[in-house]
Image 1 (cartoon, one colour):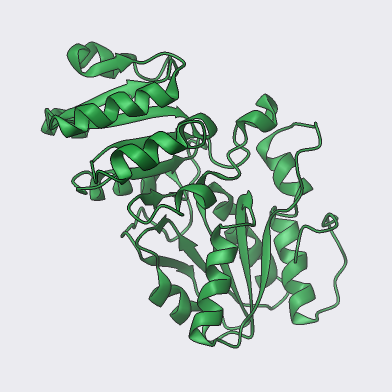
Image 2: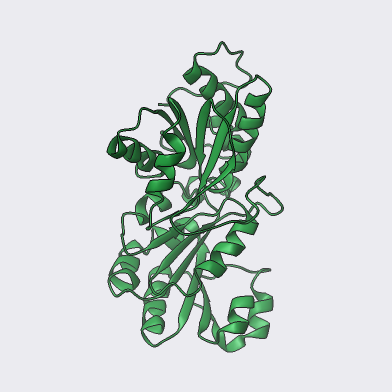
Length: 311
């Protein structure tokens, strides 16, 4: 609403979602609010035409429906034509816990970052999301935002900082490096605090955007360490861990990386986000135990790390 008040080109399109959220926008800007219905591909096509006509359309849906269902339309529309369409995917990772696997956004970032012309933004908390929206408001090309639903959660020392293509370091240590992305970063910070109780110092870095990629920052962050961990509520193919591994290889770093993410297909169960994190070894105890294992420190497992959760 703040951005729309300052820029009359901004439109908000929804795929029949956002009730009890968008009413203030609709009441204030009734001629700039469009409900495209449950037709996400058409919504992106409509936004492409509106952007071509000089508008700045924001299209909104649950992340899986915003990113995956209209993938070809995003690629062939705003990406290939370099148009300022903003695709907003709500509910990163397991945030739609009880809605089940169809609503888990586990592939959106890995899939969309394959499009070089599309900036991908995945804030770690609400304050950083607000900064990111303002910082990218005038980007001339398309942007995808993977947003979280965790109201009131704040990453210590992040303080809303965001720069496209940059890493934000929120904790400094000398023993192990932890890279994280999105709302699960709160568990990475908690794991670092838990490690401190064992006399182990962990550095924690937050990656919040791709295209441009934070290659130089991540290389600098990992270079002093002999081992590191990446943590993401995404499948491990194409996401943060794959990116960090590529940086290590390309830069010739001597850092052994353990990638924590989702490695198994949905098994038909559902549950709260925290339950899903624990199941896949992404909660603070899973990260804590992985760090101890990497460092060769004897551990008493406080929560089991599922087979295949760390590789």
